[in-house]
Image: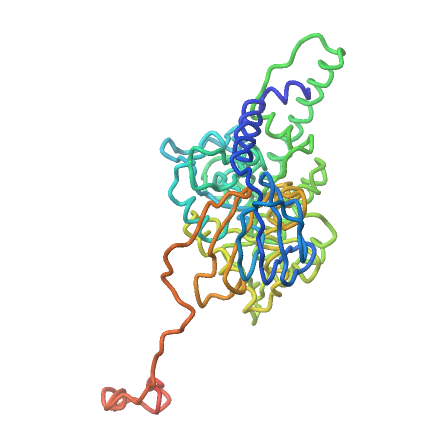
Length: 444
């Protein structure tokens, strides 16, 4: 079974390794980055530190590195890891899109529809996003296989980071959206999803028996069940679109039944703050967004979902859910959440390492550590300061993929005011209104 599975994906993996190696060789000159602050994310902040990059990898990090002679030198006030958008629909060719037959099309592969020439890739790079998962939408139980990509400015370079990173599934969105079709209820959803995973288990057993010589008839390859079998083998994550806590609990039950509870991510998940203590006891990663503030029926206050989850110990991430134009402002999501109580440390984790964990690639990307890919963002000020365009340069595998040459916004705020009362304003226009009904103007 293992040999057959390798054949299915060998073309994609071989191409990724070959082209990835070519890019690493192209960046052969060692590079030293000196910064006033290096946010490693996983090992604290280094003041007045240095990073050494060799062959596209981080080889040294600290207050002083042993750089070889002739190394290229870069400097910045702040360096953070390349940011990761764990749920996007960017750069997918949808020209042949039609109504998806349901309820399961797990054989659909985003890697076959990825468009490296999409102009939004460069826009995302300018916002410091270096990796993303791009995927199909919702509407059925499983709409297919997502792809993890590394963003590069040159579309001829390989961008495939992981051809099949997770299986996209959804619960609430298909109910009532496909009238007259099964499943039409949440109970029907669970029964149908469970039945497909049960078939995948049987499919795996058939191949195991054949590979072990216990069966003489070779099973027929079923691409739909192959996608589910990859989940059962522990090779990929399941990414589940959920809306309410009850749906999360249903998804968790399915994950426990079929053994992927430790490889489950939740899409959108804005209402998961209500079960933060339950999620904290698992390895589930909520990928929250583009709405971040939740309010349950009857609530008098709005809840910062990321804050509640991460303070409870949940490894939550952030998504744009849209095209790459939102990724340009990715760090602004973190700034918004900080304004509403999230710590800077947690914001950085949500934008970087937790997205890598959602890909099962945290051994390669998401933090500044020795041995990891040199995906770095060089900035001229605090990572969540929005007074100016802080991002100066973005490196992917040690290669400069974005460098700012035009500054459309400066750090000097535009002067406004002073404000004066409006002459003959509201009082003159609405004389019949009582005082408490009139617009409140400056100076009144």
